[in-house]
View: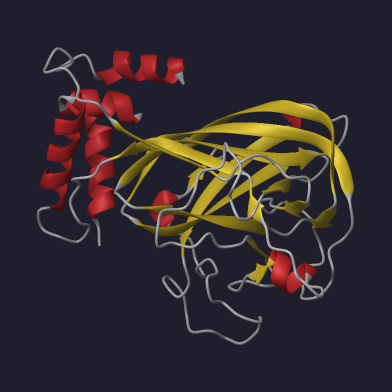
Length: 314
């Protein structure tokens, strides 16, 4: 991150940095906590012979927020080097029924599921040209076991596919450019391509009660993780309630964190004054628009202006 900020400052932000000192930023951080050893669920992009499979979990924003970084935890095959992690893609979804067709009855329910389709402007991919995210993986535990997995049997009442052991990895992600979102309830979906194996997205405690997990805002509900593959699209299944099932079906969160800055006085997307109001709020919060671009993780003031334009579209 230090290198990224240095590059941004050299590239475009020398003008205006001697303006008024930045005000105290409104820092945003959300985490579901640490892995709980209960579940690993497949989340990978499509490749030859391997259909795409997506695992998603939710978070809530109470203010307009610029998300610049994320972390995820997953299981890769034992003995793998982190260089086997070749690609990371992140998509965000609204909650059904936004961005969705009517319920088609092919799954038990779509209530509180991710939408049919992603928020296109929020997609970030290390394989894009140019790349829109960078990532750095580290091995956290060389021998980590989960009690159950969901990999291939993405249909109701399978009970899961049994335990698995591998290397626990943490992947630190920087979004380039950041993701700027209005307040709402969202689902976060990362996919990871691993040469010679799968990435099993690890579960976190639900409900979130143990630090470093952070509570959901008052009045909002922590929803469980959902999964789908190419055969199931556009629908999703609840990993615990639908697939693992049982007398008392378990429910799961997925391990991820998000970090950035809130912009409490940002404009409202779709309103005529959204762009001007948002730029003014950023300039006030950071002591000038150049300071805002630098601190929020944009390469330049022009990049920030474009990010605000995308944010303000209805």
